Length: 341
Picture (tube, rainbow, N blue to C red):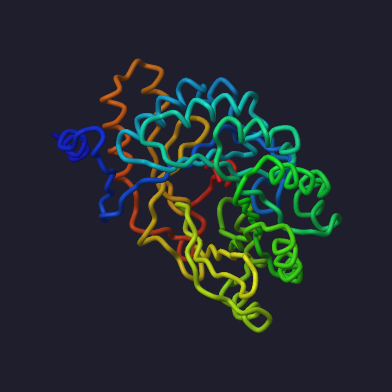
């Protein structure tokens, strides 16, 4: 019997743990519900790109629910819905309501660009979504439009206020820090988050696909940013609930927590606890490698639940020890939007 089959067999369903080849426990699944987005952020989707997956290749809600159920039966406890822009997929609150009732799932969250939150924040909260991450790279309307390929800052800010009104707590702001682009705004973003009781997460750019490699000259080492912030604020190491890789500090005298996501300057591969399910049903085990396993052909050929779980176990065993962003960035040809945030 193959190792994946043995792993699935030797643990009762509710006690199973997904363990990869490097003894890391996989308990966090990021699920892309679409690779499409109305924005064209410079580090994510190239301007003019039209080569998105055909809707017929997207996993249906029934298929997504089935895969997520298999993951939770194998020990995954956190799920994040991503894209592309997940809120552009119709009836997303319906999917969220189905997933939150899966046995073993402790946390359902969403990453969004925020443009549709005014309309969807309350339905998503009522469906059981616990937390939101909202992309916001600039508070300057012109710069925001430049970064996002024409996006409107006022829509995102309005969506953020709607999320607060709907009772999401915390609301996390994801800011990709870019040298010569928005590095002069980090202090303003800190003040903005203090005023509105948001959590701020600063993220280093990654050389994923042509868009990511084109952004290499804009790479900003967040260790330098942290040192600059320390000259202005008291930064107190702290922890924050969630399954992601951010290392958090609290700004003294405030409730603001700032997370630093540093895949390049201080990678977190040794503690990586996640895999990604793309909209077409492909499991990607690492952002910085091409290791993958396609589930859609299995799902549409009548695979049993037990065989589906064995396939997931096989995928997890493909997970590499670490990414190769710094040594072989040219290996990754897919865009961030194709992988699922």
